[in-house]
Length: 163
Image (cartoon, rainbow, N blue to C red):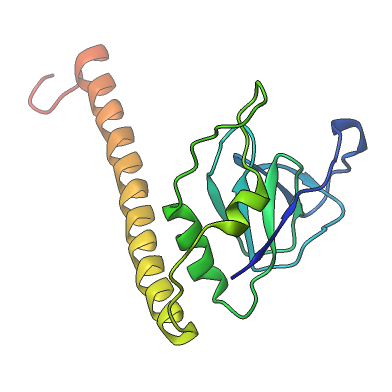
C-alpha cells in the first residue's frame, strides 16, 4: 500500500537556517536550507514519539528519528496519514530504546478502500480536524480571558461595581 523510508541524518552542527521544516518523530523540530522530500508528506515517529503521525504540506527534511512515506503507490496521501494513526505500535524491540521497524509495518495486513473512498474519508476526517483545531484555539482564548479577569478582579481588585 505504501513504501516507508528511514529519515535522513542531520546533526545540529550541519543545520543551516532556512525555510524548510525538519520533521522528526515529534513533529517540526527546526528549519533547514535544504529539503529532502516533497509534499504531501506523511512522517511517522520511529523513536521517541513512537508511532506519532505528522502531515506535511510543504517541502521538508524527514529526520532519522522518523520514517516517511516515500511512495503512496496511488493511495490518497491524506487517507494514508489517517490510516497510520490507527495502527497500534507497541514499541517492542530488542534494543534499550523502543523503536518502529519499517519492515514490520510493511507486513501489516490492512484493508484498503478504493481511492475514491479514501478521498471521501480523508475529506471528512480533515473537516473534523479543522473543527478540533478551531475549538482548541477558542479554548486558548477563553483561558487567556479567564486569567485576565482573575488578575483584574482578584489581584488588582478592579471589578464591575467596585470603586
